[in-house]
Figure 1 (cartoon, rainbow, N blue to C red):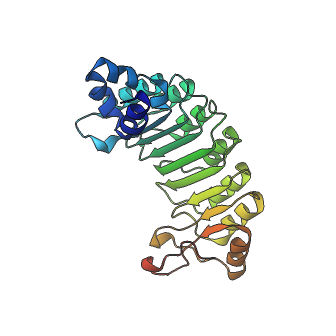
Figure 2: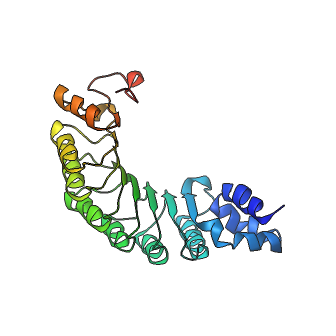
Figure 3: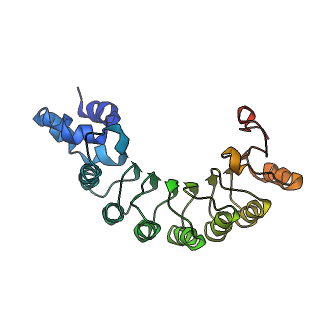
Length: 247
């Protein structure tokens, strides 16, 4: 089987830890394919995929994968593990990174994230889920350190309402896509985003029942007129009737 098929269509569908711990040990040809930098321009690691490994094991494996990308890494996702040190390592080795996703990464701090983002001038997509970020200035730092940011998604550990929205509006004027899951709680933040993010094409304000948003009728109409893909579940609307793609 040609290397391109083996590497691109088969090996890249396997978990990173499986490749580094098992697959590459099968034979010389498989090891050669597993060392090809093209195998590692996209890295997706889920700590919960194998509970036999420790957080430290996953961090070491992640560093190995990043090293093998030889600076060509463009997309990385970390779920359930990670530290400021790991993120610093990724940023120092991956200046071409275009997309970064962090989910449930308790040991990565807002300071560690901001410090790493300074070295990622090409980053266009950032997704933060269950991330410990509370301060308006932390959001603004992200925007200032990522001037090319086009897509931002966030579901923090704490409610922030229009505080988050104001910081995003102030520091991320080039956004095309914005998703704030379970955050918004009044019109002010939404209005700030409309005023200061003129290129926005997609805005998702859906969230948990206890964070439902009740937009002013005129503001909702303005959102639907200006934003091609606007998603929002009005206050007290049952979960099953959640708004999706209707205009």
